[in-house]
Amino acid sequence: MKLVTVEAIQPIKNYARILLAMHSKLVVASLVALAATIAGISGTALAQNQTSPSSTTTAATTTAANNITTASNMTLDEARNLYLSVWNQTAFNVTFSTYVQPFTAAGYGVYEEHGTTFEPGESMVLYVELVGYDHLSVRDDQGNRLYLMNMTADYIIADVNGTELQSIEDVPAGSILSHKPNTELFLELSLTQETPFPEGEYLITYVITDEVSGESITIEKQVTVARQTVPSGTV
Picture 1 (spheres, helix red, strand yellow):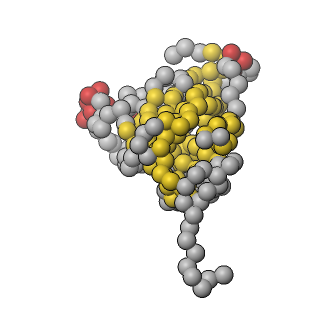
Picture 2 (picture 1 turned 90 degrees about the horizontal axis):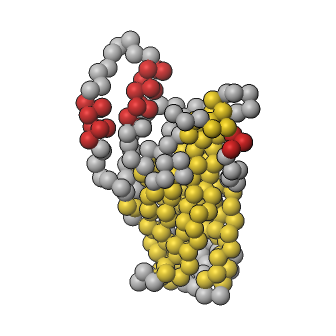
């Protein structure tokens, strides 16, 4: 595995704010990425409205899985190394995505869900879990081995008919240096309506790229911008 120094890596901000023009209105797109160390090996589930590189595991991964034999004396480190060997043969993919309430994503799998209907001016925060991303081995100035995970994202905003209204590219979504090759990573992709969108249906496409491997995946979400009706007789 090729080693590089931390100084050779261009710094990436964990939080980016980009102004978008849409129907003469400004939108602020901001992305935040956080990571947590793995606590165990868990299953995955494909989220709705997303496309993935493959709906099945690769032949190499299947072969590796079939050759796995468990032993009662297997240590946690051995189990983790076995898991990582399969991980390294797994295609980069999104295993889960959902809109969440702003500021509620406190960790991997820890969030408060939000539907796909938003008030004009309300922030749209997409929580995303990833699998199969690469870890770049680097050295710090003391010679310690670290692992770099680096993601960028594109936003493409379209109307319900698919007509593109606005797009931005190569927005930093998260750059993380860790002492361990983390396998529990989530992103928060936040779209803030600085000036409220016109009410209606929108198709938002997110393209997430693993900058270490060069692989990309796409998520499509249909959202509605509409004012909530207040029942008559309520204050």
